Image 1 (tube, one colour):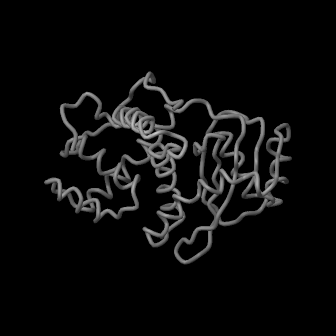
Image 2 (cartoon, rainbow, N blue to C red):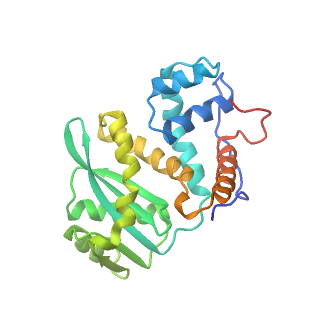
Length: 245
C-alpha cells in the first residue's frame, strides 16, 4: 500500500455531538462501506447495544462523510501519470444523468462529477475540474471512444497523450461497479446535488477499504486492512481513544 501514516493529523470537530467519536465514525464507516440504508445501520448498532436513530445516522453521514473522504485523499500519494476516464448513466428522479469518473493506474478515484450531458462541454468541464482537484497533469489519459473526450482534450490538455480505445479502459469501467451496487440499494438518487454529495464521499471512503484482494495472500490482505483501519482511525480522530464501538 502506498498510503502513509506520517501525514499531519487534523481531526474533525465534533463540538455539539453528544455521542462518542468512535460511534459516529463507526456508523459513517458502515454506511459508506457496505450497501446499507440508514435504518439498517440503526438496527446493526442496536444489536451492539447502541441506541441511535436512522435520522441521526443520516446527519452524521452528511456532516462527516465528505470530511472523512477528504482526509483519506490527503493521505494518498501523488496520483500516477496514467489516468483512466469513463462515464456511465445514472437515474436521478427518474431522469437520465451522467456520472463522470477518473481513476489512476492503481484504481484510486481522482474525482467524480455528475452532469446532465456527455457532450464536449461536459467533458471539458470534467477535465478542468479534475486538473483543479488533483493539481497535477498526467502523462497519458485513457478513455473510451466517445468523441467528446478528444475534442475537450485538445482544448484543455493538448500536451497530454490521449489513448482512445474501449478495451484499454477496463479500469475506469470496473470502478463504476460499486456505484451501481449502491445505486440499486438506494433505489436511485433523488437529486443531482444529493447524488454528487453522496458519490463524492463514497468514492473517497469505499475504495479505501477495497484493496486489490485478488492479488494478495490472506496474510497480506489482513496486514493491509490493519494499516487502512489505522489510517481511518487517524482521519476520524478515533486513534488514541480507549475503546471503539
